[in-house]
Amino acid sequence: MRLIHSALLLSLSLLYIPNPISAHFFTNVSSIPPWLNATGSNWESFHNLSGHHFGQSVDGLNRLKSYFHYFGYINGTSNFTDDFDDALKSAVETYQKNFNLNVTGTLDNHTVQQIIKPRCGVADIVNGTSAMNSGKSNNATSSFLSIVARYAFFPGEPRWPEGHYDLTYAFNPEENITNEIRGVFARAFDRWSSVTPLTFELSTSPNSADITIGFFNGEHGDGEPFDGILGTLAHAFSPPSGRFHLDAAESWVVDDDVNKSTSLAAIDLESVAVHEIGHLLGLGHSSVEESIMYPAITTRTRKVELQSDDIMGIQYLYGANPAGNNGSSTPSSGRETSDGGGALISSSLLSIRAFLAVGFGFLLFF
Ligand SMILES: *[C@@H]1O[C@H](CO)[C@@H](O)[C@H](O)[C@H]1NC(C)=O
Ligand SMILES: *[C@@H]1O[C@H](CO)[C@@H](O)[C@H](O)[C@H]1NC(C)=O
Ligand SMILES: *[C@@H]1O[C@H](CO)[C@@H](O)[C@H](O)[C@H]1NC(C)=O
Ligand SMILES: *[C@@H]1O[C@H](CO)[C@@H](O)[C@H](O)[C@H]1NC(C)=O
Ligand SMILES: *[C@@H]1O[C@H](CO)[C@@H](O)[C@H](O)[C@H]1NC(C)=O
Ligand SMILES: *[C@@H]1O[C@H](CO)[C@@H](O)[C@H](O)[C@H]1NC(C)=O
Ligand SMILES: *[C@@H]1O[C@H](CO)[C@@H](O)[C@H](O)[C@H]1NC(C)=O
Ligand SMILES: *[C@@H]1O[C@H](CO)[C@@H](O)[C@H](O)[C@H]1NC(C)=O
Ligand SMILES: *[C@@H]1O[C@H](CO)[C@@H](O)[C@H](O)[C@H]1NC(C)=O
Ligand SMILES: *[C@@H]1O[C@H](CO)[C@@H](O)[C@H](O)[C@H]1NC(C)=O
Ligand SMILES: *[C@@H]1O[C@H](CO)[C@@H](O)[C@H](O)[C@H]1NC(C)=O
Ligand SMILES: *[C@@H]1O[C@H](CO)[C@@H](O)[C@H](O)[C@H]1NC(C)=O
Ligand SMILES: [Zn+2]
Ligand SMILES: [Zn+2]
Image 1: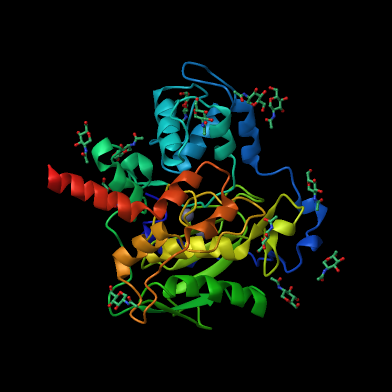
Image 2 (image 1 turned 30 degrees about the vertical axis):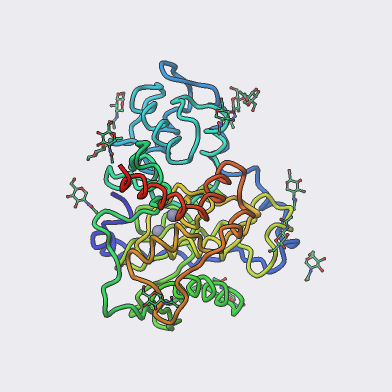
């Protein structure tokens, strides 16, 4: 329901002129100042809710309900109570399915730790449709297929129309975009164009470009305010909106090894850019932890290689690259970001074809 009504929001954003921005870019991770090494986002307070379960009433649960509401897990108003009610229990269960956690319905430690991780601001459930695990069949007979099809789209499968595959992008002119930063975005776009017929070209006129990139603080005209350091990092709209917004408050690492940073706030710009471009092209969130379209992005981590799940999703929308690269991805490259939970899926991706063959063989045989 959010980040979709682009026509409606567009009129809003034309009226709204945000203050000039100065985002924090670092080409040297050692120079991230200690004051940016904050204890984290305001989601950190969710630590306090660890261990609580259905039937309890706990100070702060209303904020957690707002969080779940924001990402599509709870319907209704934003006037939430502190009661651990059915709606919250159901939201927790859906969230746990989507993030490959044990489905307990309670706020166990693993779940709370996942909730507070920085992530993309685009909802996981759009208009009541869960694009991730929870919306897919878990039936044993189709489990092989559901492993393959973790990628997802926005409702109606919006995409750039055929005949409009040569897209242009421009930066908000109020920002000081260096060549290094331009290079980061160019590489991020290249990763998607190398597996599709799409091309991306830098333009200097934001008014006519298909995709516009801007860094903003807080409220910036689309009803989706940024929340300061960590929390939500960026968001982007589905086609053909082309709006790509990043939180100016983050410590954006450009062209340096983000994993060398000691700052707990360091975020790799290219990793976030590759993810958001997926949304700009029509992909929703995936439950495959190694995939680029997984919603959470760990700090001090680089994750830029498209995985099989991403490539299958984007080629469903646009087809393969006619010049030859049909995306024989290397699942191992996603490993650098794994916290452990999703490693099984990653290692099994290589053998999906074998599984499928077995599955179909089974059907044919019987
Ligand atoms: C852009 O750079 C110029 C010159 O370095 C500086 O005066 C200006 O404040 C910068 N603008 C922003 C938004 O950072
Ligand atoms: C990075 O910054 C640190 C601290 O400011 C400095 O000591 C170091 O020389 C810088 N490294 C490079 C490659 O510029
Ligand atoms: C950031 O905080 C962590 C933990 O508090 C600390 O280990 C690290 O040295 C800090 N980094 C900087 C750059 O201050
Ligand atoms: C967590 O709860 C304790 C006591 O219940 C309180 O003192 C503390 O400030 C809370 N922390 C946060 C981050 O809300
Ligand atoms: C919010 O809920 C409380 C209690 O349910 C109610 O008293 C209050 O009027 C509601 N406020 C709004 C704006 O709906
Ligand atoms: C899920 O439950 C199993 C068995 O209780 C436990 O070993 C595992 O650590 C749990 N995993 C998560 C992510 O909570
Ligand atoms: C959950 O974390 C708290 C502290 O963060 C710890 O005291 C507690 O033992 C943990 N519970 C489990 C089941 O790991
Ligand atoms: C939210 O409402 C939509 C219809 O508007 C419905 O399809 C969906 O199941 C609801 N979600 C929850 C969590 O109640
Ligand atoms: C999965 O199982 C449920 C109930 O057993 C059934 O209603 C549903 O149609 C099944 N879905 C698929 C895709 O097999
Ligand atoms: C969301 O759902 C409403 C009614 O349920 C529908 O009118 C609207 O077109 C849907 N929006 C999208 C983007 O699917
Ligand atoms: C950090 O990233 C670089 C490549 O970007 C990699 O070579 C190195 O092994 C990583 N280090 C750690 C500790 O993950
Ligand atoms: C890639 O896929 C396209 C369409 O599926 C096909 O036309 C092309 O020949 C393939 N290229 C290679 C190198 O396999
Ligand atoms: Zn996202
Ligand atoms: Zn925005």
